[in-house]
Length: 249
Image (tube, rainbow, N blue to C red; front, side, top):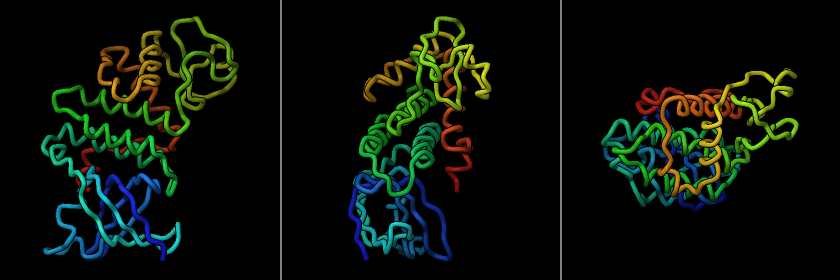
């Protein structure tokens, strides 16, 4: 029976049977993996306080095959990020981040850049900051780590540089399209002002540590949010869930 040892972020944990929990991790070495914590819901469980979402852990997991559900052998807490759970707005932003990672990644597909981006972003959450914007910028950043970078500089379909305003964003193609290509049945097209396109390009290119410097409000905020949400839904096949209900699951 293979033994997996890795650092991991807890994405979510849900009840299983009378006394157990199934925990989903995004791990440094193995990507997204799942394991059963036997007896985790018993009053004197050895897992008490360790299986909360957002926690960073050292994990040892037994797994018969890559497709089977593992069994948690050992789990040691590195960082609980307990402050996240003390503020509902911060917790909602953190929940959005981990669900973004869970939704866009395949099982057993390691991505070191995404792992460290998630850890760093959880560390950077600040109750006094613009948390919805922080989560949106993280979403744009993560798309880049999976090969789904939104294409802004030229038409995604024909490669032509576009000068008109407004620009048009295609969620299906994942980028700006010219009017000519837009007439060829590519589905939904979302208008973007040049300011919104420039903001999206900055968010796409800047290192993660520099993203908190960006600001967006009004029309730019609305247009970028609509475009990225629609694109993300196109990539993963479904919208992100309501996070208040997800937190309480």
